[in-house]
Amino acid sequence: MNKKIGVFDSGLGGLTVLKELYKAMPAEDFYIFGDTKNVPYGTRPGEEIESLSYSAFKKLENLGLKAFVIACNTATVYSLEKISKSTDIPVVGVIEPGVMAALENDLEKVLVLATEATIRSGLIQKLLKAGKPSIEVEGIGAPKMVLAVENGLGKSEEGRKIVYSYLDQATIDPDGVMLSCTHFPVLQDFVVDYYKEKGKDIKIIDPAKKCAEIIKGELAKEGMLTSEKDKGKVEFFTSGDTESYKKIGNVILGDTLTIDEVKNL
Ligand code: DGL
Image (cartoon, rainbow, N blue to C red):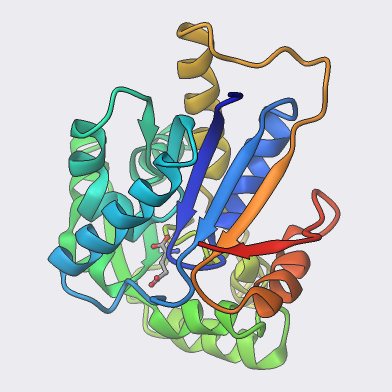
């Protein structure tokens, strides 16, 4: 059986990571699962996030995987360790790739937008400080941004208002904003606009590209990368409503990929 790369998120946000994975490895086959029945994860206690994420991994593992991408910052914080310990296949999350990308950009003042659970863990703040002790970091938990994307408001004026209301809360004047929730790249233009209106060009850090680079490197090292002859296939799964996953998902994917069918898992 041809084993695939499994990609998982609490909801639709994983699609922003899938885009980069697909661009980096177009010959690979992917399964992507969005746990939209249980989204949001970011407002739940850590043990619940761990257990939901582990069940999601098991569901995809049963289909046959050669690697697993936790395309959710919140799930990465609370379940990367448990999932990695339970399997021999490469498992990659999005927290470290995001921190690596931020440090490579040599930022001085970073605003981290994420879920409440990710901010509460303090993991990103700690890793940034470990990499660059002089860095100033402020974290804002932005649950309404997750819901805006899940409800298909990612490109709407309502979405813009929600983003602006969180950015208004920031007390630092950042040179970079980390989109440390995989739903947030959908709202990226609003973040950029907000600072442009203040006459500032900020750097946006989206962990997805770095994540794709890392998993590609791991597969190459193990000799498990598919040759570039064929185009890969992506199969889409959700625990929730298949039609709305397809409709909103296609807007998020733009012209990179098209969702024709979504199955329940
Ligand atoms: N996409 C998830 C992340 O990257 C968060 C969404 C949620 O709250 O479930 O953290």
